[in-house]
Length: 299
Image (cartoon, rainbow, N blue to C red; front, side, top):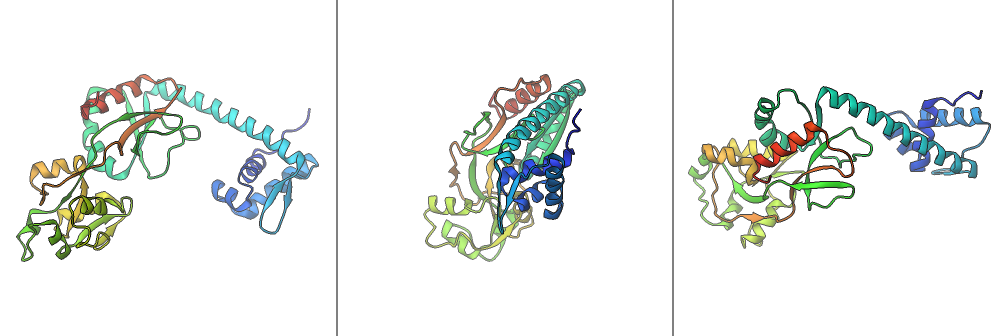
């Protein structure tokens, strides 16, 4: 019986052949380019075939390499899917739910309300992670995710959650300072607070408010996330351009105020619960989806 090639060597070859790059394969596998090259060399020696043409800055597949890559890819995909099915069965038995959301959405809206879901469904464990990265249900162990966009992603079912309304917010104390904030153009005398993840929000609102020519939409201070910008606004450091539903609790409690009535509705560009299309929905996922849509009044 022929001995199977080393799995690490197969993974290195598959990644390098897919990217046509040793460097990108190394980044994906979290190893050095030298380690990838050694694994591919080992695989070639095991097979007695040259799989790659190695140029100065790029690699290409030999004819046997292209044929072998198709076979390896098919096998790895089949193994990945089998692993996913087995883990999904085990997860279903444990009633675990794997979710991903944005950091600000998770911290300011979802986490404060998860206790209500757990109270209603004490046997379901929600495993929540936060990331700005795109979601790939084919390669990741996720049941669902919260994404911001237009509602159309390939290979997913999307449920619209909420109207995405933008408006400036600030601490009440900021309005008691020497500078007055009566009209949008007065914002040029105040610090604007920005999020790296949402660089255009102030520009959208200022344009709608007719103050884009007088107020520099890029001025002020920039933070890693919207939650950090909201925290700065709560401390009186300036005005944040807020997604209203994420600061509603602070508005209701008087910790933040709306200095203007003008708001901007982002339309279909809003938050959605997305799930992989064509995958059977588990009972915990059904329960979570119903609860989440109900919380937003979207059920």
